[in-house]
Amino acid sequence: MTTDPLAGGSEPLRDTLARLRHGQKSNVNAAAYSRWVNRPAGRLLAAVAYRMRMTPHQVTAVSAVCTFVGIGCLAVLPPGVVTGVVVALLLALGYALDAADGQLARLRGGGRPSGEWLDHVVDATKIAVLHLAVLSLWFRHLVEPGHLPLWSVLVPLVFSVAASVAFFGMILTDLLQRRYGTKADPGRQGDQHAPVLGSLVALPGDYGLLCVTFLLLAWWPAFVVAYGLLALAAVLMLAVQAVRWYRRMEAIA
Image (cartoon, rainbow, N blue to C red; front, side):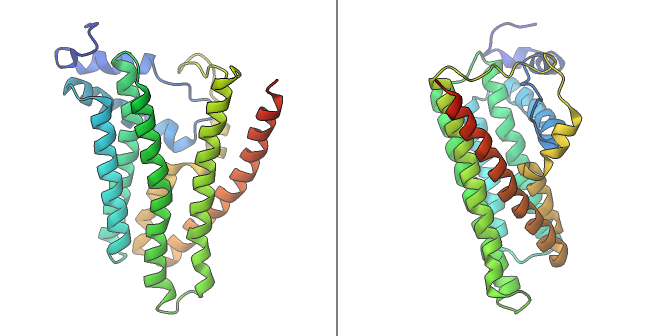
């Protein structure tokens, strides 16, 4: 097995995948889609990118292109089977590549601050813009034809606020815990048992589940119900997480 982090093209794919499995982050607290779909898909994409001698920055850029093209299609195309499939696939691929860039960085010997910054900026942008694209679609195809009242546009707006605040809270909590040396090492996959129930409970807040939900664009009533339930879950989970994060900050001496 090659030990040169830049010599990806000469290493068999199975060996690269084996090294990635060994260095995988712990699945503790990982939501179901991320745990069983996105991380394995990201691992495969990271291995392929490694063999192609791509950098983590390049993988992040490809992830951003897939994600924002998908969001653009959501904002301007009429709802239907084709739109739903295209949007869901592009967002899911962008999400898998988002998992791949970090795995690729670890495979190449560790990430750089610029890579972490770029990854977070792309994530913060997509979280906010995605729900604004839903708002555009919602208004044009539900409110204007009279299918739903005007106040219903609060659903994607509230979802956008909850998702953005949750992301900011997670990043800020992580930053402050690192600064004051109270962040526990999550370990690697296999270091500790990850309860299946915990992953299932966290599923409603999983970005991957939101990506899959866009397949329902072919049938508006189902999409409205599913998206509305995910928005409600985002608000409730933010409330719970905010209490937990605050308690962690209070515990810092």
